Amino acid sequence: MTDNGVENARKYWNKTVYIASEMGITTTELLTMDVEKVREILARGRNFRYYIFEPKFMEVMRLEQHRGKSVMEVGSGVGYDAVTMARSGAKVMAVDIIKDNLEAVKLNAKLNEVEVNTYLSDDDSKLPFQDGTFDVVYSWGVIHHIPNGPEVIKDMVRVLKSGGLISLMVYNEIWAWWHGLTLQEIKDEIPSRKEGPYSRFYTMIELLKILDTLRCKIDYVGVLKEGRYLIVHAIKR
Image 1: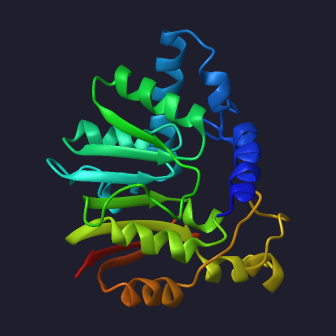
Image 2: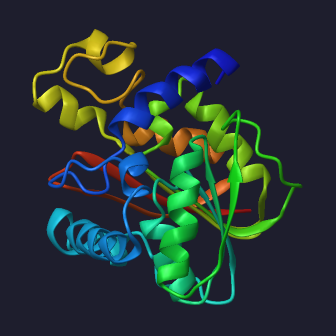
């Protein structure tokens, strides 16, 4: 993502990152509230994410299976998943392009009495970590909002240890066709009926090919939300 692309993304998501879709509260607004109100809102958001939005979320995304492991999350938002992994004993690094998101991650971690390290990125495709740093690299709902998504995945694999796990969720192209999106809406930077300044959809074959090229062995493939989201776990050879 270019510097201009990062700034455009920041401007958009600063206004539209919600704690949970049914509340309509942005991260920036959250940080102005008193601690007990923040605690209440984050608890509601966590409940929505894991028990209403998608009851199989934690199980399918393996959030509680990384005890003692080093985990990097690309695109942490306010840190629901980062904090959940930390509560389960993982050593977590949350990476995001939005400063307020990372401030919310720190607050979320403090309220849950866990530690989550953070890094403010200016370019999601160039992670500032050495090769083979992490046991797990994780991203939910972010890669499809980045124009050079395959390059981001490549760099995620670079910082992953041999034998480590990469876990991804991206938008499913088949779901998009089924729900009447046009080819341009699926492949191009057209905001109609999509989220963010940039969105695209991936096929399962496309995603598996990217990971195979990066010498990753597929460990799990599946879908959530009636096929809208593609889920892949793969192990770096």
